[in-house]
Image 1 (cartoon, rainbow, N blue to C red):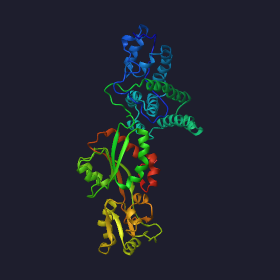
Image 2 (tube, rainbow, N blue to C red):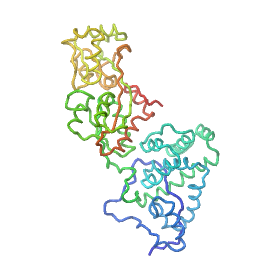
Image 3 (cartoon, helix red, strand yellow):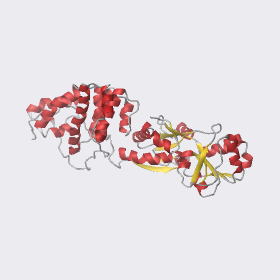
Image 4 (cartoon, rainbow, N blue to C red):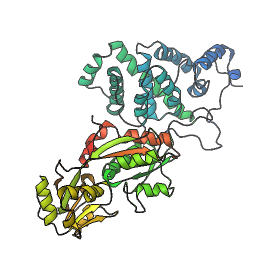
Length: 451
């Protein structure tokens, strides 16, 4: 019978460090590395402490406690430190739990996030702050003290130092003892996280893992072309930070081609997330095909025009000059999605040239307009600026004048029957993070979630 002469830590568990991979569960059927200790196996002198732990721990004697019992002297001494850090720290509980969650995310520690996420929310940490953290982005709308906790923690994790500027900023919000306690709680819980990894301790049986092992979750994403350039840069970063696999496909937001997003949904294709122009997404939401409340507006997209690289560049800076450019072009191309529908059904009428465009202006299904222009199959073409910027062999000559411009919002939402609604929402949080505004802008879009 296992009877270590012990007292165990009377505190909850935690972690630190940077690790992109979630702590991996044991192979199916594999024995526990450290067989679970029961109260009956604990020596008499450790019984009272074990009972106290059971009363305060969301995982009972499992998790780190199961491993710490193996080293009685360590457990006894660690207990005093953890008692202080968890229950008597000078930091408000909200900030203490936030610091623990930050390290839990960086370690992708299953037990730590399972145990401390509800504790952090109960202590007053806004749920959006915790959920942004789990999505791998800098949390939005943090209070001043939460921002200091995040910045101090991440600077130590990533750079192993605190700059003078950050230190001075922190001292305006936290006193010296609180700063020391912040670093102490973070650093102390590194050892606990390592113990959890050593023992391959997971969430309690029957409870989902907070962090999916690499490749365990595959999200099926379909995006229209306007957001595709930004998506292609953001997707790999999200995969690395989340361990989710993104299976990406492309299709227009409207139209009747086989790869159009509404057509795909009508034939029941398996999808978790769609990214498309706002009005078309709203129609699918009204039809009940998308998860209510999951819509996120990502960026606005203006229409631009282009010619083949090196070709004469007509001036389209005014409505009259745009009209002349259309009339002078021998062949014109526009898309079969939002921008093309606007050009065909509204812009031509606004310019008063609809009749003159018959026979020389054509709508291009599926293929990017820029590619048609680059191949010389059209002398002049217009489409979302972000889609044109992604094409080689063309020169973008400018945006439509503001008097006749159409700004199209790009939005994303979770598909109603997604197998992974929570993971999909996490992906949307990531896409809409203010820290990605510069990248989105570089692709030709106008980001809405600015820093």
